[in-house]
Image 1 (cartoon, rainbow, N blue to C red):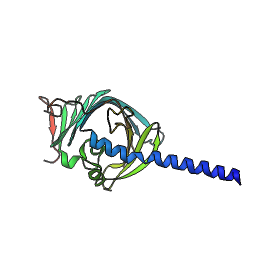
Image 2 (image 1 turned 90 degrees about the vertical axis):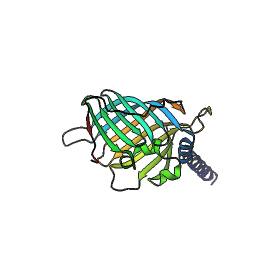
Image 3 (image 1 turned 30 degrees about the vertical axis):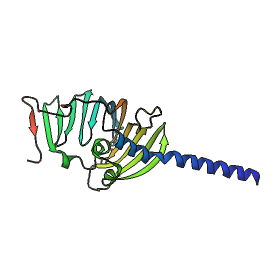
Image 4 (image 1 turned 45 degrees about the vertical axis):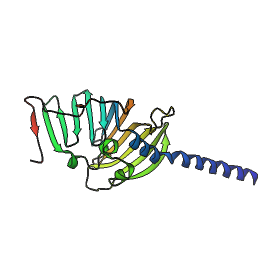
Length: 224
């Protein structure tokens, strides 16, 4: 009987520890949103394409830099293996393919919606984010707090996103930092972005999120 009580005690203790640890996910996300008015980091993106009959899954790896400033401004600059830029200036979302010298411009309000970018830079608080996503706690893993985000809209191309946040033990960034995004789209493609050399609330140049199509670039505006 005593041994059984001890076993039950270990189980209850383990359950409580897991519950308390996982309870930090939403709190970490809310703190990150509230405390990070701007940010910059290097990133690695690994995209896994679904396998096809007779073929194994294909993997593509890219590297680049990321910056954002609330509200609604961010840029992803892919540097390797192909140079591309995604820039949101608050009004327009620009996609620039350097190799093709082609620019696609869309109204930002229509283009973002329930996208991973909304999780990083658009939402001013957790309540606003919950209007677009169902947010649930996930168990901590690899020293990170995790939140599962599922779009409320059933008609988008995004299936789910897992947000990994790294608490700041030194207190330099009270809300911690964004460590990873794990994205699954409606086609089964999985994309994992990991962020490195994160800087919270850096002073960014005023023109950091300005974009002008290069001379001779083919500019496509799908809304026209």
